[in-house]
Length: 313
View 1 (cartoon, one colour):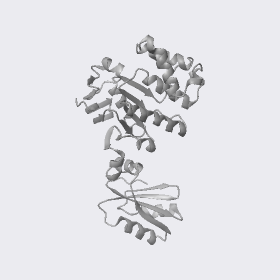
View 2: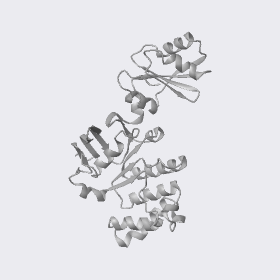
View 3: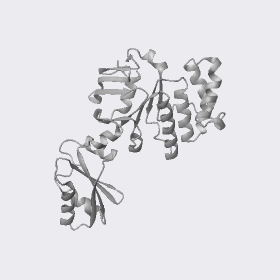
View 4: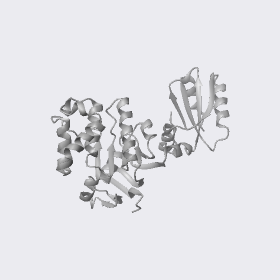
């Protein structure tokens, strides 16, 4: 395995009867980076993470994680990884300190260093005042910070996060990502699944999954520059009328309304996408202003998950 890669998977697949939850996935995750899985529920994100940490046996394919074959050497891998799910996997009838002490016992953390490590984590994740509070009585943001502290207590080389911010407020999400960047800068490799576009943009690299298939892979900025689409933004007095006019154009791949603005995706092979848009609006007597704009990650997602012959509105 390439020493610069924390994870290398080839042809990784998982079938549940006739359902192909993950279908021939190739994956290269660099060390000390944040690598994201973006996709809706049912796209294969959680299944992939469970295969990579040895909780599920692949139907086909192979994976090397931190230089170890999985699931064959999963027991050797476990001390090297931290795993956090969207439900946080905490013991609600135990205090914050007791949860951390329990995790330290599970990972056989040196007894002489446990107290200082727990104190360090309580300070780092702003949980000092909650030390004796029962985890079940904490807010979503507090429980999220505690779950992260538990996941990194044993200094894992790889942190696997399965939609860890789905149940917290926006400020807690921002604080959580600040902690992730600090971990990556210190050398931890992080694989995080999400369905939030703004979170996906924060990742160093990103894979977009659709029905178990990887449909895009690269740095967010790289993906935005290579959508294969021209993006026209339309500001109309009547957005619904404008959308109705534009979606009738056979060459238009997608029209999405964001507030009072429309995002129109037209294949790059079409000449003068702006002119095509304006002509249609004028034909249907729609008063609007149009301009070509850079693609967003949401535009990328729409473009790569669109099936042949499908049009999105």
